Image 1 (cartoon, rainbow, N blue to C red):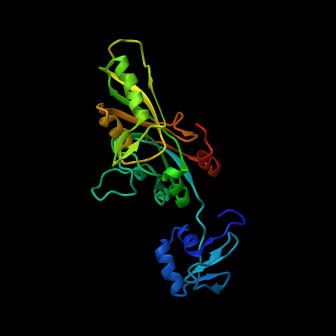
Image 2: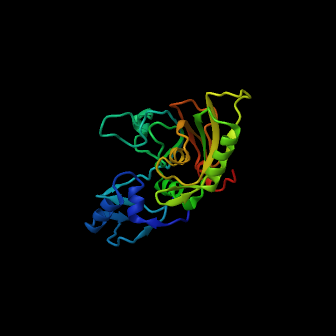
Length: 249
């Protein structure tokens, strides 16, 4: 919590990683939570960063919020753990960071930038469309198409396709010319969206008749992969993490 900011007691307990908000409410109702030595039974009670919170007579330590940029390889699952034993994104992190959570999702067969954090409010703000955070994807399709077809793909992405019963549009789209050969194995498109529907980019291309061969997310707002290698991660500051909400990119 930032200086001067007050938050609900159950949320403060949850942010320390010792209990969910629901479980924290149960602890409060049982009289097991005290603030500055006083037992609190009010579920709506709010605390400041300077308040000392004890649960079952033990002072709880506030978890520092951490933010990481991770280059997700294709083939791993964007989840905390998988019941089928498949490799997850957190398997690339040490045990000391397994309390982190991915921000949104990338499909198993999609690679690229994934944000990892323990800041729940940040996660919710990034994944909600109202945050208007732009995500940039590099999309490869079969290259056996004409110049006019490539232009038509861009126009259709911008005008929108119907997914889940509603019109969904790309915020920006263009073809990237990799070379000047008339016959190319693949064609590459840059596509920008701010929503995060399930498999959205793949489904948009599929809807207009061009299955995706490879998909790579390169940026989320002002944060990009840069020179980060596949399967690696780097920590960024809170300021860098939250700067994506002010990005004009």
